[in-house]
Length: 293
Image (spheres, rainbow, N blue to C red):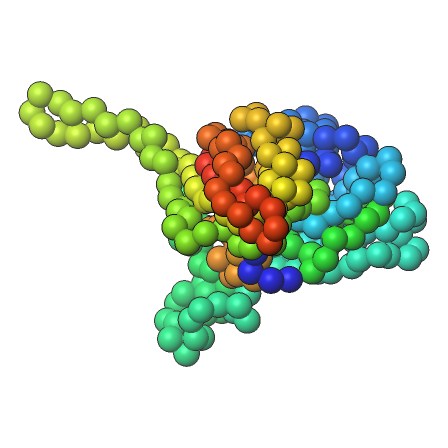
């Protein structure tokens, strides 16, 4: 892996058959296929044998980005991802167990600088306040693309205080990356839709709503093949409605919960011919991605 942005699409979840685990009758696995994240799949308990499910894509599909979205996983949770050619998973093409929230090995701070009362001191990860107030998105970026028919996801969170596991959406799909990374000036911000009302006396009242992430970036120095065959094709296929998963910095695993998210293109750019490069045209295109929730 390197520092270049990854844009994940399509999400192969919707075309897959789901099976396995033990899920509540009123909150079945099929809820994962809705884009209403409030309609979640809920396991009957926190045992790994219950909080597991398999995606059958029908035929081998390339995968690079795997993510759990709108979940209730605790600070100590881990998740195991397995990819195989056969449903029995006797042999695996990929097998990795990772921290859901990132670990101290990737943290920018030192354990010696933490107060012993903090969750992060004891758990080697974020504390509870860090993960509140936004749609939890835990992504795993595989080092290289793996092509397989079956993906099994097992959630390891037996100490979850809710006594069940919930997940609102899953992303499982390939990703594209430009030869030259997006230009300096990319921005990640929050769109705040909190309503504010003021009384005659000057007091203000707030209808607080969850902030939505917005990522804006531009690609330049694209070849004809990249410009027309990859990034303009993304615009054609997914428009303003299709899902894309954004990973601005694949190597930043600690800040992945803040930077990586499932979104849609709100302002798909036009492909601009900007110059001459290596005996051919050089192109540029800009994107604005709004988080889905």
